[in-house]
Image 1 (cartoon, rainbow, N blue to C red):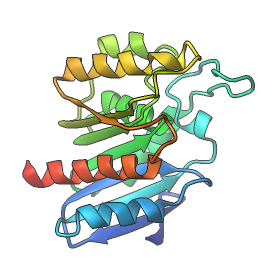
Image 2 (image 1 turned 135 degrees about the vertical axis):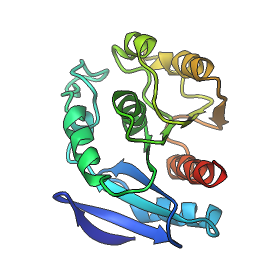
Image 3 (image 1 turned 180 degrees about the vertical axis):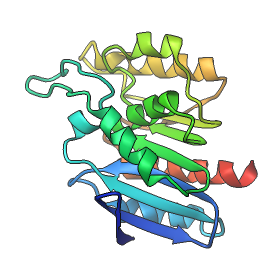
Image 4 (image 1 turned 45 degrees about the horizontal axis):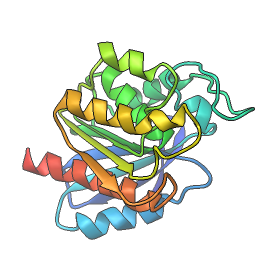
Length: 212
């Protein structure tokens, strides 16, 4: 991937062929966007797309939709997601059919962002943190505006002793039922094959654009 400054952020970008959807996703210092891009390239080599991986400085702050207590001590959520969404709105100007994907809290952010704006034609939440405090009430009165929504989850993610995070399975199923779509189930817990899961979600968004 190449570096490019977009609205004040140094992003990692890649374009395959010309045209096609533009897929945004968040990453932090522990991630390697090049791995995701390579996996997407392997699956979508013959399809047009553009990838934009944008950095976040504070995962729990920049991707949380509202303030909430953390499930672990000292890891509260600052609720600065609206600022990140504001940047995305500026960054997506001129993009054809922008889409958004994310893993873990970034997956929840992708769903929330697609509820808050009609900007995104597709949203992929891979092992999304739909256990987030307040999410169950929020999604009762909101729905993603995206035409294409992709949900995936590890089959052991809900088997946790943490009562808050254990809601992830039921909440994912409930959202899938509301939207009339299927959940893609992956083997393992939250941390197994994270790169592959996110790449699969991004690839599915690219494929949905081509088949639309």
